[in-house]
Amino acid sequence: MVGLPRTRRTPSGGRMLAAAGGVLADRDALHLPGEHATPARVPWERIDAAEWDAEAGTLTVTEVAPDVAAAPRHVVVVDEADPRARDRLLQVVRERVTASVVLQRHVRVAGRAGLHVVARRPPGGGALAWGFRFDVGIDPDDAAVRRVAAEALARARDDVGA
Image (cartoon, rainbow, N blue to C red; front, side, top):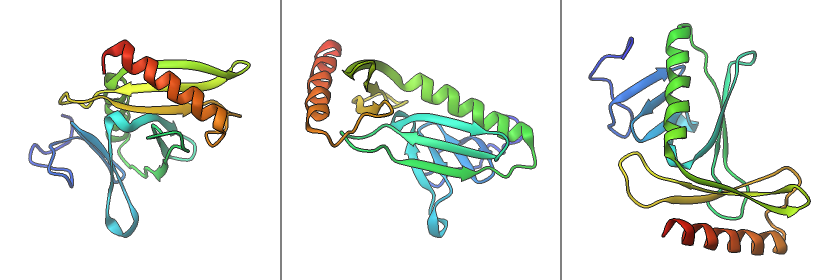
């Protein structure tokens, strides 16, 4: 690990893989600066997307919606003087999120728009974490969307034997 002491730990006690601007990554989760100095711990299998905005210096982390609801989002400023540390953090985020994906299936709801059923596995194994991502224009509160989501989830679970 470039520039990280071996003894450095995250708030949950995990060995740190990367850190930049107050954002920490360990084997199991991404730790984001939170209100009142309490970091938000987001397990890798709960992250749907992580987007870096170089111009603004922000990392936007969108979680997989735990049910048919709006997905939680976190926007943090990564004010990092060491671009190597920032680049390492972004690399770890990309690798860990990608490695968690087991299944991602798009289901149409209206025209080409729809929802994605997503299954992710925690780094240490265990039960799949299921969730949804909705295309622009799809209302997760609509009863028809909820029916499509429930049916798609049941089919996906059946397909992977979960």
